[in-house]
Length: 388
Image (cartoon, rainbow, N blue to C red; front, top):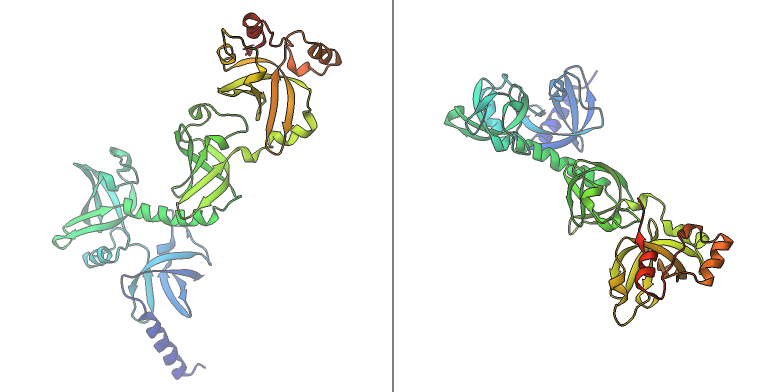
């Protein structure tokens, strides 16, 4: 049999612990037990609070939490221990409770009755409240989409003894989003592979929502091993995409993402598939003052220096070369570590080209026409648009 003095000591200790908290204060705790009607919450140390199980059920009547889960709730009573609440049920709250909810920030349940000028009429505890259009959702919406729906709201204005109520659903949604964002941020570390949705597309890349409104930048240079010329053709807002986290800058709140890192780097195959003297077909992808960049395969580009192109006094090399032209190029140098390959356009009819073709080494370079020394026609024959 329990000693009455022990019972009194336990009650006194519980009372002292309860006094650490104030009515209306929002606290966080861990669910330690869920009974038929009441659940118990560990609020730190040996402190424990109770909450009605009905507060933990979803609209379908199912309990939406489990033992061990952490929740946030508002202290509604400190008498004889801590009593918590996560919401005030629609139609069950009194005006005094609504006023307390206003001061404490406790969510209240309300039904959107109809659209009115500037917003919506909401029924809360047999009271009429007003929710502006801008406060019904995270993004401004109008129309009948919300009519008849039951939501959680926060009372942002309580006037005329409750006869003038202004409520916001957006305030709660933003809090939930921030909480979700904190959870997502904890999972965002360099090297992590995550799935998100493209939030917006820019010339320099795409912003990807990783959850909770947390966005990272997938720069155009990290999209693929091949050059992406038009981001809008590769992605559009709403696309689901799996990316790898490259860098996280907590100070600047910047997250850098990569896509090409999820596939094999084509340069890893270069040592076994490329060698100096090979002839390969290539496509001019861009021009620079010092030469032309030539794509030898997706993700592998070589540089044909300006000095390797035929030219005369009447024309310089760049006036005869256009982006998209294709031709045969000979590998002149390979630097795998720096990812650089030097190439030169192959002169038409050269002995080297003929021998390579005979040996079958130039199969990838078909057609074998090269850059002739007579400029003009021969050059256009060597760099002709790639057939689709």
